Amino acid sequence: IKSINPQKLSFCTKGSCKGRQGIENGTVKDGQIPEELKGDVEILRKKLLEGVAETDDALIEKYLEDEELSESEIKKGLADGIIRGSFIPLICGSAVKAIGIDFLLDSLASFSPSPLSGKEITNNESLSAFVFQTLSEAHLGEVSLFKVFSGTLSSGGTVYNSTKKKEEKV
Image 1 (tube, one colour):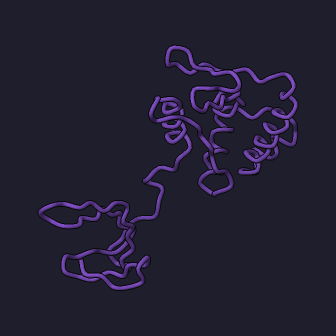
Image 2 (cartoon, helix red, strand yellow):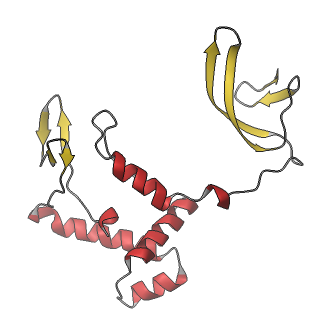
Image 3 (cartoon, rainbow, N blue to C red):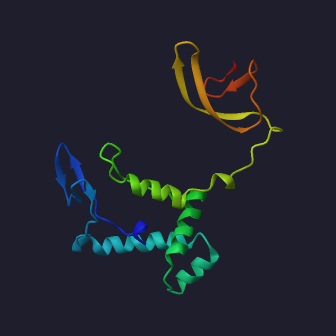
């Protein structure tokens, strides 16, 4: 599975790059692992596959019997591990140069939980919301954008701001 196969990355700073650049005409090319690192890379890949196998009893049994995990089993194990917090993916790229963005989006689509699998929002619970952006509008003043996790929010009511540790009027 390409999404967990090790790839050699380059490190570039101020126009000087160390390692294989892997970029030709704006297109990222796969790099080769140097011979002297292949042993270490294989050890790390085995550790990753072991972690993937530990997410499911059937996978760990298959892994312990030295059977190869299929691509779909690896993807499911990675997704389950990410959801549980056992794995934290690290994806490198550059938004400015559009390098790695396709891989980032593909990874999010493959390994993120469905929004439908989350807890159902109900009006019967107390208000729980997260403000993710505050804008300053000339005619309105400050406008906050937020996600409601539970409860209801009414104009003119008050909410508890956990950051400021005080009640605020809506």
